[in-house]
Image 1 (cartoon, rainbow, N blue to C red):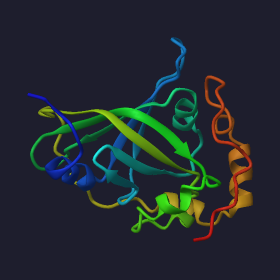
Image 2: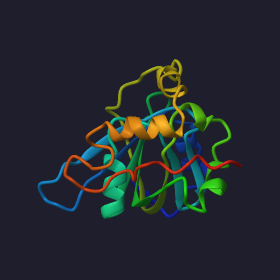
Image 3: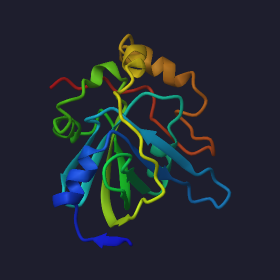
Length: 196
């Protein structure tokens, strides 16, 4: 029913790149820590960089659990479900890291997302994921659903922020600079958005 893959290429890559949303899962090392599971949308916010590396844009939000967990231990799982077409679920288990605006890799990485205007979404990090285990399962119980469009609410909400006001917004949220479990989250204040 399931298969393990050596690399992300061919039909597997086409499937991943064709999905309008995916999910991320991370957890702290502490046995009683809070597991985080997040849906990620906006077409074009994920890129397959090579056969073992993916990246996605981490936009403004009211917490930063994924960033905190990656800074602590790097473990992450990405999952895509086929909500249309043949049933399929793909998981990439791997190691991730947040790349922040002041990282020298930022300018090169942002170039992999030509279909997204990061200025309207409060982009705070690019998450790099190195695949360690790539597998799929049948997805027979995943419902058939229709993708209509991305919501425009996120872009409309954060388009009015500049670097300073976005930093202030994050500073006012209890679980952005520090995770629910007290781990270091998004470093504040935000560095300025690099100019290309």
